[in-house]
Each structure stands twice: as C-alpha cells, then as structure tokens.
Length: 470
Image (cartoon, rainbow, N blue to C red; front, side, top):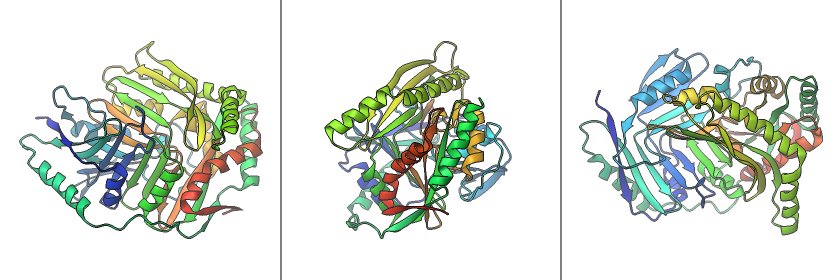
C-alpha cells in the first residue's frame, strides 16, 4: 500500500488563534486546542481543525466509524480499533521536518473509557450518555506557534494528490476572515443558578466514607468530585471565551462535537509523546492566588511545605511511574521534576514530571491501556480508587477527568487531563470539581476546595452555586 504524505505550508497571517477560532466555532466538528496561557514550551502551540474525514465514536457495547456519511459498526475493543484507524491514517513526514502537531485524531477520551481497561462496576448513573471515545480524523490542521508568532497548515495528501486544494483551503479561510462579523458580546449573560448533585452534607459524608476506606487499607487516596448543572445562555464559543478569561490555561480546548460541546481550561498535561519519549505531569495541591504579594507568598510557601499535599503528590508520582513502567524500557522511567510550584493566573499548583522511553512498537493504544485514566484524578491504588469513585460519586464523569487532545502519526501524542472542563448538552451545562482525599483530610476543607475550583466555571456561566442537591 502506498503511504500518504504530509506537507507543511507556511502562512503569513497576523491573526490570533482565538480570533480565527471565533469565526470557525460552529463549523462541523470544529476543534481548537488552545494554549491560552502561552509563553513557554508547554503552552507553545495552538491547533484548529474542522470537517474531519473520519469520525470514530466508541460506546460500551459497540463502536461507530463514519466515512463520507457512511457508518460502520464494530464490536472490536475501542483501543484496538483506535490503533487500526491511526495506522490507516498514517503518513510519511516531509524529509527533515518534525512537527509536534499535524493531521491525525483530535477529540475527547471520556473518563469512563477506563471501565473498558480496568474492572469497574457499572453502578453510577449515565445521564449524559457521552461516547467513551469521540475523535475526528483531520487531514488539514492549522497550527500556531506562540513563541515564533508563526502559522502553518499541515495537510495530509493521498498518493497522486498534488496538493492543488491547499491554495483553495487557505483562500476560503482568508475570505471568511475578511467578512464583517459581530463583535464579542460586551455584557455577561443572564444570571443562573447552578445545582449540584452533592451539597456540603452529602459531600462531607462521601469524604468520611472515603476516609473509612483509607483506614481499612483499601486505598491510600482517592479523588472525589461533585457535579454542577446549570442552564446556559449565549453561544458556546462566547461561553468558552468567558471561561478562558477567568482561567487561561496551557491545555485549554473548545470542541464542537455532533450534539454537544466540550470546553476545557485544563492546566494539566496527562501524556506527551514524541516518538518513543513519553512524559506525564501530574498536578496535586492547590492554593488560590489573590494578587496580594504577601498573601500569595504565604500560599506558595504553604503549598511547598504542607505534608498532606506533598504526600498526595508523592503517591501519585509512584503510581504514574508504575503505569509508565508497564510500556517503557526497563530503567528509563525517572522523575525529572518533583513538587515544583506552578504559578497560574488564579491558583498555585504543585506538579511533578515523570519521563520514560517506550519500548519499540508501542502503539498509542498500548500507552493508553497502561496509563488511562490519569492517576492524579483517580487515586491510589488506581483500580480500587476507581471502584470507590463509582460507589461514592453517583454519576458517571463523562469527559471530566478524561482527556482532550491529539493522537497522531509518527509517535506524536498530546493529551490533557480534562479538569476545569464543561460539557454543553441539551441546553444544560455540566461540570465537576474535585479534591484529593488522604488519611488526614478534613471533610469540610475538602468541600471548600471543590467550591474554589468551581469558581471560574461558575463565573463563566454567570452562575451562583446552590447548596440544594438536585
């Protein structure tokens, strides 16, 4: 079989990614990986793509692959089918060119994909019905390099395709940007009330039950989340822009999928793969950033010395090392950064970075089977923590704490942990906020942490949280 190839076409545009995305937001299956907190190597690239050639949606009982409006159904395990589709969509890179983003699969892996990997009972209600995998395979993607202020188009061409359509594609985008367009709304949407599935009493009770599991030796820690739901107004992209303003993030994303939208302002990298080199960057520990220098310095200092936060992060680092060790060459997995404070616009976090070298022949599916979902949002040990999450949270998480990002050819992969993430479906907005529970957790303090994490999402919706459980 003759391999397709990819070409890179430099562009002289001076638009910002957010400006271009605003014009494209309602195109069919538009995806925007948005390095909204740019300025370093982690937040360097933004990617825009729309109108995929293939759509792959996996559910618990079957998967659907749609090409040119024709849908085929498969009973293959989702990650095995994913590898097959990625192999089918593979291409030869341009000689001497190595780009971190290009044509490939963009979309979302729901947290609940984990139940196809690990043994987790299906007891939580699935009221969203989100696919376990929802990916589009895109032949043309626009990439912006924030460090060089440079755009390029990466296009996958089948054998015999001279690339004549590239000029038409670029011209269509330029004509779209030349059209008059309404400005971004200057006022906030109408105020709404956000209800939560767990009020303070219910959440602190769940924390106490988790603490009992810790005392019994079932687990060392678990991440417990509660879910908010509210009406939403205005366009999905205007809502995304408000979320982006409230909490700019390196691994943000806007996804316009078939019957729902995913809006993410994630600060956390789950997996970054460059050929055989792979890294994960778990976050644990959060303190609000106020803008007052003395208050912020105290918060930063407390984060670096607090034994609960350090123990929580260390346990997750051990878990992630073990997960990567399942697919990496022996002796290559190492912690290259530990308990580093990251100053984000609204909060301080601590993170660690674990790296390894994958064994030859490791597919993206192999890597996901070994690591998904990320340990920072399950707990340790992972499988038992996931079982307890299922027991205590009551509702399936859907995209929350799954991953949004890119799975490409040539060993390229970039996935976030989908925290600070909202799902828009059927005129309702859904989002979660969670906290890591360890042996010395205080239930009321953990509830307060979830409330703080929800503030930016509530602000984007112009919502007030109700203490009434729905």
